[in-house]
Amino acid sequence: MGGRAIVVTSGKGGVGKTTSTANIAVALARAGKKVVAIDADIGLRNLDVVMGLENRVVYTFIDVIEENCKLNQALVRDKRVDNLFLLPAAQTRTKDAVGPEQMVALCDQLRPDFDFILLDCPAGIEGGFKNASAGADEALVVTTPEVPSVRDADRIIGMLESMGKSPIRLIINRFRANMVQDGDMLDQEDILDILSVKLIGIVPEDDSVIKSSNRGEPLTFGYNSPAAQAYSNIAARLQGQEVPLMKWDTGSSWNLLDGLRRLFRI
Amino acid sequence: MRDNSVKAKGRPGEISLKGMGYGLKMLLPDSLPEDELMEKLKHVLPRTSQLPMGEGIVMDLGLRDCPEELILKLLSRVVWPGKLRVLAWLSSHEGTLRRLRDAGLSTKEPAPPAPPVFAPRPHALILYQSLRSGQRADSDGDVVLWGHLNAGAEISAAGSVIVLGRLKGLVHAGRDEREDAYVFAGSFEPQQLRVGSKLSFSDASREWWQKPVLITLQDGKLIVRETASLMGLS
Image 1 (cartoon, each protein chain N blue to C red):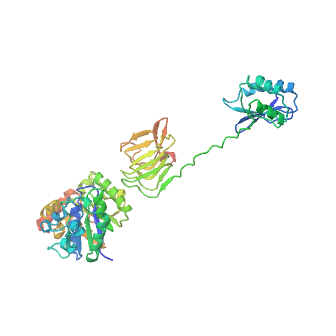
Image 2: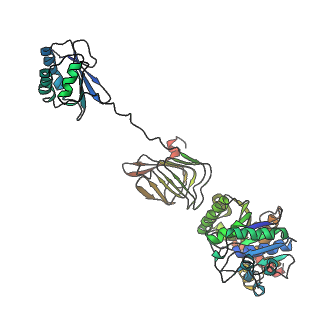
Image 3: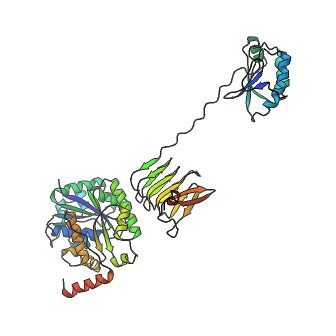
């Protein structure tokens, strides 16, 4: 029995798959787990940038599959935390460069050495999604509280179910409590009613996410922000810990709370 | 006096008409003398003219020894004036049978038509799940969905469609332009609905939105009824 391979997917692009993968990977590693994050978005790689490891990429997992290098040569170790590795995607290739069987073989090769294998899946439902999902046992589906995103998540969940992935759990990203309260955004009950899967966490809309992505420092490295806390909680739940969902206030009180935190540097 | 020479069921000495699978069989009793037979056949003609268009008739001469003259009389006084479509001439008398054949008349009793074959109604497709976006159910019969039909999911059925949960996706019932097909939804929330050849658009402003409804096609129009009122529930 090796590590758990989990695909982070969504269907729709731009909902936060890569950000979620990076932050959860860091949080798991900080919790003492040995983690590898695989960028399965061949040709449009971003995970190395979000994780701040862009300048250390030498080989990619395509090189491993094509036997141009050994697996441990392609793995990029994150020096900021023990036990965190990145397996980057090739930027100069397309998603046809790899097949599902090769992804399964790659994950099987990684399982004995890692507790968690997180696969950052490309958007869409075509080959890239199928390849990334092929090697995974479980799935984290990321959606934002918007009708198009939820509909695409529904599509992806149906495909993951037919592929036998289990459990499939949901991350609601960019949640804005004030908009939900005003009735301008789907609330979590609406989303769960449609998608009928277990919720693993709600990540609030948070400016610090954009800043951290640009800096290449995932929030779960220690930033004290609502999104960082939400991702850490998701990582804890992935490890089987019982962590209650955070209570979201409305926008006005949220800003007040945020302001107090900043004032007292907590 | 009312003529009763033609009976639904034959009695001795009387001409009778009998319904067969292929049409009618006219039984000409052996015991009637030739003149009397021709006289009684005059009364039969008006009845036979009431036969449905194209209905065939079989003349059964029984054991009667019919000379060629009598056969000619039957043709010229009964068959041709009555415009009867005689399918066959039957006889149990060898000489009569030969003469009928020699005259070029058919002496083989037609086989009754094969019983109509009704195509078995396809079984209903029953799904104990929800259909997610991108998933589709297709059936030549009815479809019963024990779950939700999410937005982006589709059901296409030759028959009727029953969605016990929320109906948010696309339903086409009676897709072969069947007008008797209907749609039931536990909660009616589709953007579009198709029954038979009719297509209808819907939105949240409709009074039946998110309510249990039955949609039928009547006189070319889609009729939506809240099932709560149909079932006498408040």
